[in-house]
Amino acid sequence: MADQLLVEADPYTYGFDPAHTALLVIDMQRDFVEPGGFGETLGNDVTMLRQVIAPLREVLTATRNAGMTVIHTREGHLPDLSDCPPAKLRRGAPSLRIGDPGPKGRILVRGEYGHDIIDELAPTGDELVIDKPGKGAFYATDLDRVLRDKDVRSLIVTGVTTEVCVHTTVREANDRGYECLVLSDCVGSYFPEFQRHGLQMIAAQGGIFGWVAPSGHYLKALEARS
Ligand code: C5J
Image (cartoon, rainbow, N blue to C red):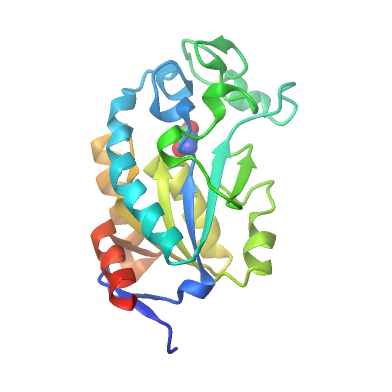
């Protein structure tokens, strides 16, 4: 336990060993946070999500400096859409559907400009990027195997959107035995009430899915070690 760092968190102190912890950056793609992408086609105001970029950059830098594992994810589909369930493709009345040509390329399709991670948070060096067809980062991906190979047991979770891909991933991770700390100002929603309730749902009932803390508390824990 010598290397445990402590973060003041809700519902109680979160402890993690940097050598066995990964920072997960979920779906910080142009398709979600820039105009003309998937998020906007669903009728959302994408500026709501841009608030997370600045604090997340600080967290990324500190995590990289601490020598910890960083893993990015991207939601999206193969160009022939063979990995997109018809129900997902048909649902709702978006202005453009998945696979349609948009201003940043085909909506939510791998290899397109809009599908990629925003420049501000671009992966560096050997940081892994996990492409996922679903909302959860564990569904139909190698993430669990990758984490187990690296002996990672704790996840610092960031990205968008709080109530969709972040929540689904935290629930999947929790069921697989990972201890998740969600950084409240580094996850974002198009809906302020979902942001609030989404975070409450994670830490409620004694931390039913995990812990929640502002990024400053996480950064303080890393600084205390150095
Ligand atoms: C959504 C995501 N909201 N990354 N995806 O469809 O949260």
